[in-house]
Image 1 (cartoon, rainbow, N blue to C red):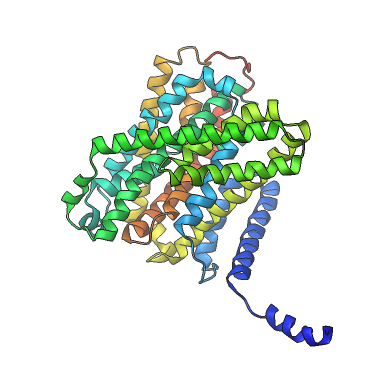
Image 2 (tube, rainbow, N blue to C red):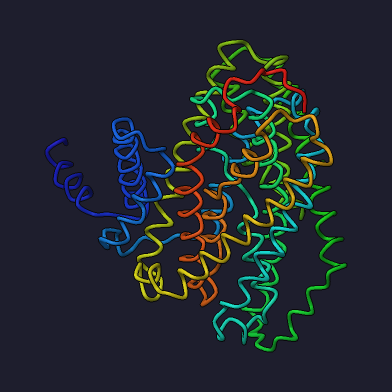
Length: 440
């Protein structure tokens, strides 16, 4: 019997199907990311920055497998929910409430101002083929919305080593979490209009007028509101279940179901899966961990989601480099004069818009902020995993080919310039070592 089965088993191992190829690709990417992580322990470069550079090297060497396929479902359904849940899981609602006004101002008016400012600048760089298909403002606003979310991962790591006060960490994390939510919702509304224009073959600039501003605002409110409701209902349901269990493995499994179940349910109901996941994460992190979980369960869930966050961020940063290999013109697009100029101008526009909002908030609502806070908050608006994930979620088109190298360039400049100089800024401004009870 065994002798008869052996040739069949050996033959099967020589054949590669979809599942084995996918698993092999995942292991290879994660192994590469882990190798980069080990190297950063010796060269003292922030891990996320090292991953961006590693992704660029992959593209430069043309080392990515030719049959790799990145779909929008992979990005928007698989990658975004755990990134947002993990952020909400560690955010202190008590501290956040004391920073509610500046966080809300940065997350809503700040996102809108940044989106419009970046959109205005990028209109000067849009290729004619994109303008013919979508008009000027629709793709420009989409680009601006993509760059509105911030990524505090590298900054928070720097804050820890530089002994920055906890209230400042909460302000930066809270802003990032909620502007991720508003920025992604705005992006998804604009992306839907882009997809419709691609499907319909619209090519006149006037077609972009079909995206009514009033209708867009109404849709935004409905989508966000429904997302909040779904997040509350499912988050409280998970909280109720966890209070009645004492099994750390099963409870961790419930949080996994909660993350993707909340996202998918909200999206099926035409709400914001992003906002729903954020709300569920806040409930689990602030109430579930204290009132519904044992110490062992809380430690298990925290370790698990930190690992998932590491894996997802690693894959996103590497995949953007791989994607550069397959766009028209390849990685050489990054050094084209027009791309470099677009990167420089859009990064500057984003920074100027953030400065206008941060300093306005600081002088209006943050008059009691300790010395140096406003400068650190300005410089902490790094671009990272979310913009990269959003650009990978676009359908294949000339617009996507134009945006990928520009988005990658802005993220690269942001991480290198802001990420590497943050410790120096914290030291110069005197933020390091300030009292954790500093008033906001």
